[in-house]
Length: 403
Ligand SMILES: Cc1ncc(COP(=O)(O)O)c(C=O)c1O
Image (cartoon, rainbow, N blue to C red; front, side, top):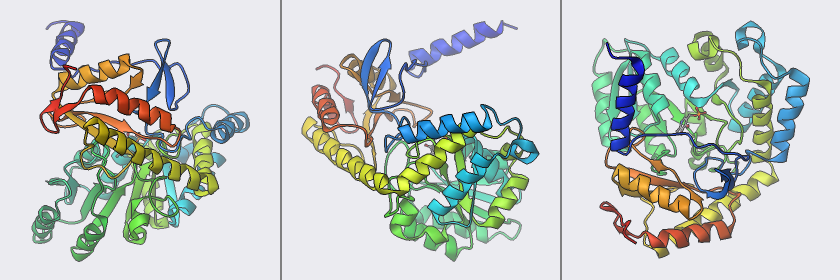
């Protein structure tokens, strides 16, 4: 058998030829609208730090205080002796924020999905996902062993047909639908109101991933479910503390029974060391900020920057797909072309990494611009000017790199 490194090096070379190889870039500054990479300051249009809280003094101070008061590590899983006060405080703050009786935090959103979905459904059951849900929900659904059905993106007729099929089979038990409220790579929104009507009509459970909506949508910035008034009908509210909230960690918010059940059954919660106290304390501080006057101002600034960016893009000849959020994808098409466009933008001082297969389908590579309340109008204008150099030939045929 060939040596491990020989096999892996060949596969890496294939990935590179296809424009699919990834490498880490070392960021030598805190997260923010400007970051330092390879000794150079770049305007960052790729983070999910939508409200600019990742390096906010209140979150930094809360982390430092928690490390001083509770140590650097958690020592054990939550169910052994690692369930520290900062974890409980973050969960209480999260439940109050989401308007649910209880909440449970995990070390990341990805890990939460791997625990939650298999805890709720198994081989006798059905899990139905939108075609574009995040990889963590796909992985959780596969891991559950439930019959997996995928409906075309945001296609309610397709979903209803699957629901009819599932409810028509006596041998099948529970039905869990998993969707995102803001789709992470397209920035478009799920039709939540009719989705909720469908899940109620067929007696299915609904798990809603609000990763990219929490902190940005709704009068209290709880998410899209709040914005459209269906929060109380979502069975499992799910998301991450690592985007607009400015910290790290995954969460589930819902009934006390749901949380009690999950802490008994979600394997990635049970068999894993608790998140470090600093992360939980930062999340709590982020949640407090998001709910207060600063949250109001920051969310308003975010939407202002999004609108400014859309104006700049239109002037530069780009159309950000069907986005209705702070995620503005610029479809390029070919993987190598997306890599090249990103490289050229970097040369001009912008960090906008290419998004390629398997994150999106082959041939649908893109630059995924994300806006933050921490961007200035000047940042946005500068990117608009840079993008006007690389006008797309047409939205589907890809960007012109000849300029
Ligand atoms: C839609 C969506 N769900 C879940 C996750 C996972 O969250 P985390 O980054 O906390 O693992 C992400 C992001 O990475 C995401 O974009």
